Length: 260
Figure 1 (cartoon, rainbow, N blue to C red):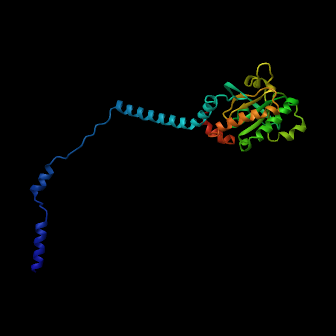
Figure 2 (cartoon, rainbow, N blue to C red):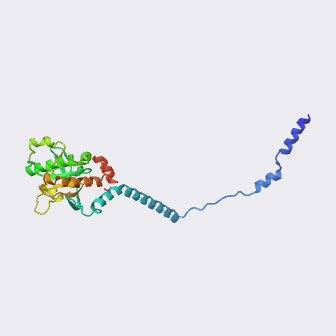
């Protein structure tokens, strides 16, 4: 019994003061509120402008990083050339982009000349009958490409035919790795140009993966000068190695971020 009495006394002492006066005092106390000011329309607009500007600068920085290898390779080749080093081919300035022109393959398939963009192109121009000079150029194109070793996959050799003359049957087996296209003669004349006192068919031409005609080799090349052409090709392939890979899909993705 004494233990129960002690427990009852403990609960009585620990019980909270629930007197009416205390409850009334708490109810009469005012509630505390915090008021936050809203930003003015001008300040909100200014913040949005700053965020938009920051996003644009970040996007520009990303594009510059992507294009840097392309710009660096061209700057190295065209500007930082060591003293005494000369190109065998003549650099074209300004460069001329591939025209938007329909072309037809020997099998009759139609495509666009711009579809050649994405690879280095070693071009020759000659009628379908293919005279001695044409045959020599086709042979040099094939040999120059093969001589590039593993880098040959980055180069296509192309024969552009500005007429409707049939290609000799005996020539067809040698063209299995070539790109042969019939193209409007006026389009070629507006895009490519020979050196003074020479004809269009007397030169080989070089187009970069971005689709720009950028070099013309001397007229009437022969085997004695082929090594000089090869040196120019190797130098350009080294300069573009950081962004140009075999295949049009790879170069299109990298270049557009280069260019482009």
